[in-house]
Amino acid sequence: MTRHQAFALWITGLPASGKSTIVSALRPRLEASGLTVEVLESDEVRKVLTPAPTYSQPERDLFYRALAFTGQRLVAHGVTVLFDATASAQAYRDYARRVIPRFAEVAVVCPLEVCMQRDRKGTYEKGRRGLSGTVPGLQVPYEAPLHPELSIDTTVVEPGEAAKQILDFVTARFLHK
Image (cartoon, rainbow, N blue to C red; front, side):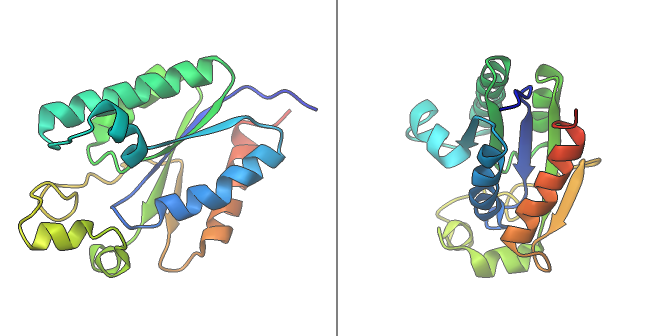
């Protein structure tokens, strides 16, 4: 088996844009390429770091620095990392790019209205009803990537095809001989 250097991909987009579905299709494909892969999914990591999240700005800043640090340590030890996290501020993703040498940003593009229709977790409904005041794209800005290495429009690209596009990118960028 060929040993590849680990890398990190930050899959970013609005809540309910399709990030987790794409990551679920991508992970087994990367593992089939011989990579050890860890998914850092923000909701799951948040349960450990901030079990009663307030989503305040200082808490978000700390959370995303910790998420990037965790990813950096995993990559340093040979584990490829998929960040499945909105990271609504470009600064969060830029920080990860600074601390992880082999890093790429994948923008999952989907209009807010479509995300709201797809929302199985009820995130946008809570925001509309005033139960949450910090929903990216609704009450707080979502800063779309300025220069992502790859953009995928989930209104026209199915998750399996999106995973294939990312795998093709990864193969050319990180797995080439």
